[in-house]
Length: 386
Ligand SMILES: [Zn+2]
Image (cartoon, rainbow, N blue to C red; front, side):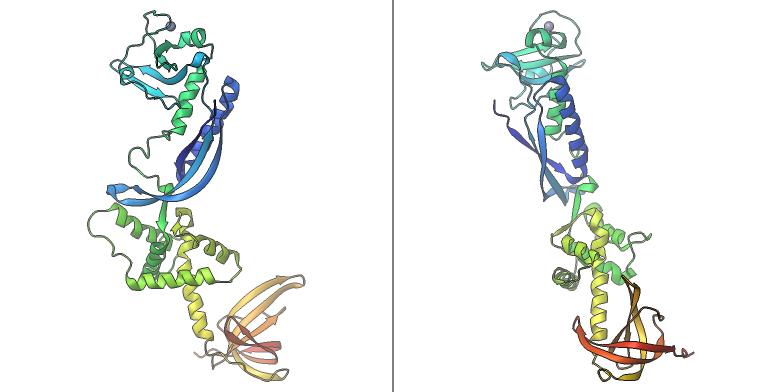
């Protein structure tokens, strides 16, 4: 018989428990001598599910493709269910079989069609043959009648539960596992803009982090009845789109920007990535500010000539190299012209203005800003105005 593949749709938060359960079933299948199933974890996609209060939420689904694992019985019999007998009715544990369990078995007594002995049984098993004849068999007769270990039937029921996605009832009850939630990228960025403008930007580690604030705004709109936060305005949406376009086109090869570019190449955000995506807007704003700062920059000094300048330090980048650390000073003069000076010994103070004696080494454009590079600088801090 050809072993058919079954595709299980697993929400992201449950993928580990499903693969763990399958691994355990595979180990037990080997011990029981039943056909060992195999599985592979396939692609993921975002689907819309009904969340709290009947509102749509987006959920990440991963496909797990399971092959084999059907318990083969001799004589053309197929195992379809184990019945747990109760006072008034039975719990029906289906096997991984496409034949429906007749409704009568929901309330049937614990009889055995093999030995016809009337005794109290905790569970019985329902099988069917090619002719459509059903039989109910007690556990102690399973080996007699079918020649297999009854534990293989319990295994088949456990396997079916995983394949049917009934591993737990959490999602069956209409709840969506928060770990499986995903958020619309544009909404996340738009709400980051709203939060940062109101409260400033706060790292994920901080108490009132931007990440949590954004989550509160978005979840409010899906969880709480009553007055809702306003949806993203046209202005917020446009600003978010610009920030996203900037990020996608950025050529900055830092690891942070690489991660950010990867995350904004999709149109949804997973909860674990909300903190990084929330940093997109402050990053973009800083770049905008830098562009404005450098916009008026012109080259100054004469190439190769040593001269006297007054410069304020904006930023120092420490570059680790074979010969130790080099401190790259980014500075500007009173006219807003940008100067760069690399020093292996001196490290000036950011925000301080210096009298600088240095040689004009080169004139270069860096990220659309005209920069004058200095060398062999002697710097004396100016007295701060009181
Ligand atoms: Zn029996």
